[in-house]
Length: 80
Image 1 (tube, rainbow, N blue to C red):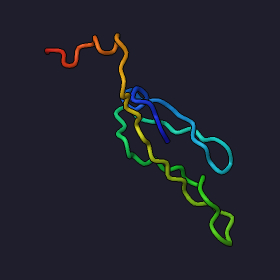
Image 2 (image 1 turned 30 degrees about the vertical axis):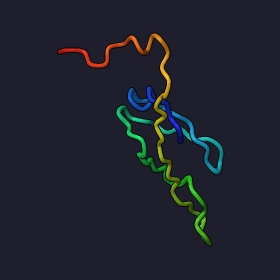
Image 3 (image 1 turned 60 degrees about the vertical axis):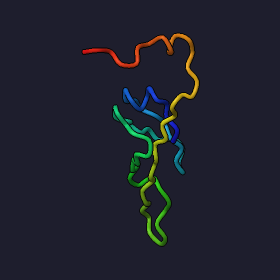
Image 4 (image 1 turned 180 degrees about the horizontal axis):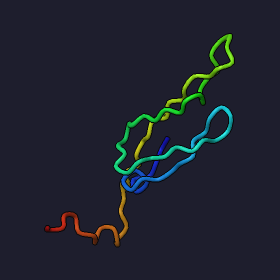
């Protein structure tokens, strides 16, 4: 699941595709790339039962490679 840098650092709610449609995943603030979220009961059906497995969703944080002029003007480290 690719998420934006802002969504990962500030926290958000994103929709992910599942076997039954779309599901909502709450992304807490400070989420790192590679974090795995578990959606219980949203995975593949378990053979010869009526229950389903879990769907594992890995967050991939998209870090911008190019900044616009306004973003480059922002201070990198502000003194305390």
